[in-house]
Length: 382
Ligand SMILES: Nc1nc2c(ncn2[C@@H]2O[C@H](COP(=O)(O)OP(=O)(O)OP(=O)(O)O)[C@@H](O)[C@H]2O)c(=O)[nH]1
Image 1 (tube, helix red, strand yellow):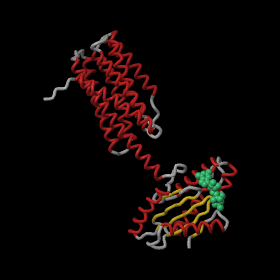
Image 2: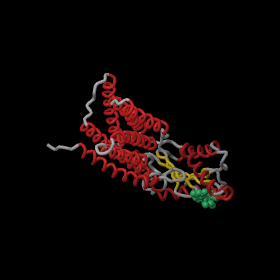
Image 3: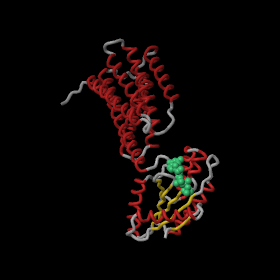
Image 4: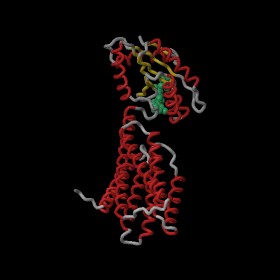
């Protein structure tokens, strides 16, 4: 039978928490801009480490100030992880609630320690506020989290932790009301602290897993999308095209390309500057995307030209879509931005054998004709 000394367990989990805090800080330094909340979690963990240290020192130094410090650091640390999770999910951090709980929790604990010593009352206060910190995070995960394993893992752990604390709160409250003397065994408290610290450590690992997953999604998105307009880039388009080509071929359905070029865009840049030019590009991309069907997609390979892929569409459908785009640009006119028109070339895959490059070349020729014939118009590839 393995016998674990609670003090050693507490000591080890405290040490591991320091290591985890370093991991979190370095993750924050590397991708803190993309994934929020990691720095709060790291700070929170360090506060819990501080709490573990003050708790361990209580046998050697004056107890009261050390236990008060332990409770303060516990509130501060767990509260910071709540703030971190709020930031992670893009919610406004509840600093007022945070400071309210830290101050009120500390004041009540101090009262039941110094003025009217009552262990059960102290435990009630601590578990009530700690429960709030965990429950709020559980709410956020289930409400705003994705359905990925990492989110579910974190969500499940934090929910279990919230329930454990709730049970402890219930027991402490009962003891407080009926004046039952709870066992104030140092070993029991140490075990509880050890398990609590271990859970905090596990939650940190789970939060890191969630953060890594978030980063992976962001990087994937970046490698396939154009940062200025948010539409697909060349790589993203190639993947989308390959997938749709297979689907349409199997189903024997047509597929059409549209090449959209903003008219006299150089003049927009020259007159209003590059910044306004960029905004016009983003505006046109948005207008095009909003006009299309769910199954269509837009890409920007660079410059002021967009490529649209319309699966399950022939030239006639594409023609209608192109007119809708021209119309949308007139209707969505943004008063902050100069009005622009577009020229559009349309090309439908002539046969199963035709390559993307060949289709692009034909569509490009159609676009060139649209420009030659006066711009702000649509031409079909021959
Ligand atoms: N603001 C901005 N301008 C860009 C970007 N990429 C390309 N451009 C500009 O787009 C302009 C394209 O000009 P041209 O190819 O001469 O075509 P145009 O002025 O639109 O004229 P037509 O296409 O013939 O109607 C150039 O001035 C490029 O500098 C970009 O990312 N941002």
